[in-house]
Length: 136
Image (cartoon, rainbow, N blue to C red; front, side, top):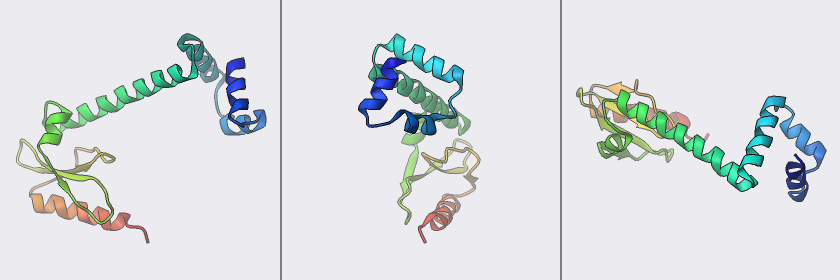
């Protein structure tokens, strides 16, 4: 716990600032953080552990998305996809699915329900979303 307080002070964060930023931490969450820091030995290693778990969860979500679209792996889905340029600089893709439908998707909207009967319809859907997302 003293290590956490010391880290906050060396980062220019007062105890009061820290409280206002993190006042919603539960006692259990703070205890878990203290245990993680103690087990890891350094704040950097504790953060690495958290980042690793987050990446694993993200990878799992991508795998589930690919499998719901009919592909064995996320890499197979990406390999079968074509990038679509949009005015909003979004990274959109269209993919011919094993069932003959076209999927419109991007890394931020990994939903398998954006299926269309033609590639043109999938691209039109992407362009419509891009127009809505343009800054005004």
